[in-house]
Every structure is written in C-alpha cells, then in structure tokens.
Amino acid sequence: MTLTSPGPTVGVVGGGQLGRMLGEAAAPLGLELLVTDPTPDCPAAPVVRDQIVGDFDEEATLRELAERADYLTFEIELADPDVLERVAKETGTPVHPAPETLRTIQDKLVQKRRLSEAGVPVPEFRAVDTAEDLREACEELGYPVMLKARTGGYDGRGNIRVEGPEAVEAAVDDIAGPAMVEEMVDFERELAVMGCRGADERDTFPVTETIHREEILRESVAPARASRAVRERAREVAHDVLDVMDGRGVFGIELFETTDGEILLNEIAPRPHNSGHWTIEGCHTSQFEQHLRAVTGQPLGSTDQRFPTVSTNILGDVTERQSAELRGEDGVLETPRAHLHWYGKREVYALRKMGHVTLTADDRDGLLDDARELRDGLTFE
Image (cartoon, rainbow, N blue to C red):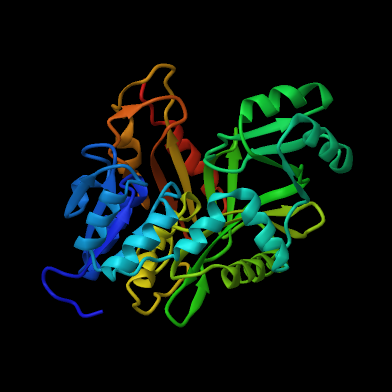
C-alpha cells in the first residue's frame, strides 16, 4: 500500500459502533473510510469520509462501495458473501476476510462442523429441525441444553436455554427456523482472544476474561484471571481457529474455560469484537488499527499489553425507547486513566449497547470494581 493524500480507501459494510471505531483508527494510518448502512447518518458517519445508505446485502449498494474503495471489509455478519464475492471479482477490489469465511461463520452449525472437523475443541452439538430432533438430542446430551438459531442471533438473541422436556416445544417455536443444540458447558469463566491474520503473519492479543449477564457482555478483564497454562492453551486454540479462516483481518474468538481447565470454542466473529474494545487503551495497537493494517496488507502492529485494563459496556437502562441522553459522564471524565467511548446512537432502549468505559491501572487488584463503579454512575434515566 502506498500512502497518498487523500489516502487509500477502505469500504466497510456496516456503519455501527464498530465502523465508527474503525474510522477513528483509520485517520492516523492515512486511510479513508467509506461505510454502507441502511440507517441514515449512522453512528460511523461523523468520523468517516462518506456513507452510502443501503441494505447490507443489497447488490447495487455493495457494488458502489466496491467501485469507490481500494479494499473491502465488513463489521457485521449480515453482509451477503455471494454478493461480496461477485462485486469484488467484477470490480477488482479485494475483500477481507474472505467471503468464504463469512459463509462459514454466518451459519452456526456450519461453523461448528468446520471447526470440529479441523480438530478445534468444541462443545457437543446436534442439528435441530423439529421438536422431535431436539428431544432426541437432549436424550443424548442431557438437560439443560442451549438451543441456538443457526443464523442471525447476537447478544443472546436467538439463544434459548432448554431446562427440561416440557420446554422443548416452546423453544423450537421461538427459534422458528433452522437451529442447532449444544450441551450446556460447565465453565469456570468465559474467555476471548482477538486473533489476527495478516498477509504473511499471524498473532493474537492477550487472552481476555469476558463477563456476561443475560448473555450480553458486561465487562472485559485483561489479562484474564486465569492460570498461565489456561491462557497459553487459549492462545493455542485461537491459532488453530485462524488456520481454518480465509483472508486477512481480526477475528473475535470466544471460548469457555471449563471447570476441568480445558478450553472449548464457543463462537467466532470475523471482525473486531466487543471483547477487544479494551485494546484501544490497553495495547500498543488496537484491534481496530490491526484490522485495517491486515485488510490493507500492511505489517501487523504489536499486540503487547501496556497495562492491566478493564472495559465495561454502557447499556440502555430505560424501559421505553427514547432519545439517548447520557447523564453522569463527568464522573468518568474526572477519573485518571478512565476513558469514555460514546457510540453516537440517537435512541436508547433496554440493554442496547450505547458506549463503553475503559479503565487502566498499574495492577489488576480492584480494577474491575472501580470500573463497575464508574459505569454504574452513568444513566439514561
């Protein structure tokens, strides 16, 4: 890549908070960002060169994006891999990660099968099309189980915990489409590794502990509060996952540490991920800069951690959808080594991700409690 002014352009399918943070990371690299999103004046719009308003899978929109960009990538899995592959070929604009990776990731059953066949450790799983399929699977796996929609789910949506036989029919009806079922993993903690695939190199960010409630990520703690052996095994599994992926970029790799100290893969996101937001302040290179370096074929940056870091999500705490007006931010801004990230969403509703707070320190003791206190001082009420 040769830097010019204006610089090379990266076209991004999706203009939400991830697109916004990609835009913030692009400027120091001399890159221009162009995003496409169906929401006019999307969260990324204020920090990128331009927005094309259009659906994530609309061919005319993606073709215009490809024609105006030097590289293509995506920050949401709703992009159509067939359309992306076609417009990239016809315009000569490379897309990373590869559309084949997106095809694999979009269907959770295909994803699990592909990784299991490659030797990546995963929970026991089965395909489910009917209530009878689910009953038979539960007889093998035992209750409770986790029923997952094969496509489209995120932040706990499309996931249903099935406690017993009496819940089978309702769970299948709620999914209302192709599904898979997984054994319920008895885990010590959830972990995440941001993996990086460059042109000729691979790397991983430090292993992160992720804390969820209602299947929504609340806090990320780096380094993870796990043993050195567990963290090393998590990195090994992440590298095995990268071997299965095609194309360049950053991959969010979600893992379970079982009560026996084993590592199992949960899911993969072929893009920057909420569990890697802490890298903006916590590492020498953020996950967003790393993704752009990889997509454009530049050398990867250092993934070394600068100091212990906790990131906490700012979620909607209202009962009704309303205009987004955050209160209490002075408490964050007045705190040394605390960093507020606002996503620029116009409306807030219950549990919607509106921003995050990152807190760094020279040691990890008490850091999570301090970060939670800052986060809990914020409200939309």
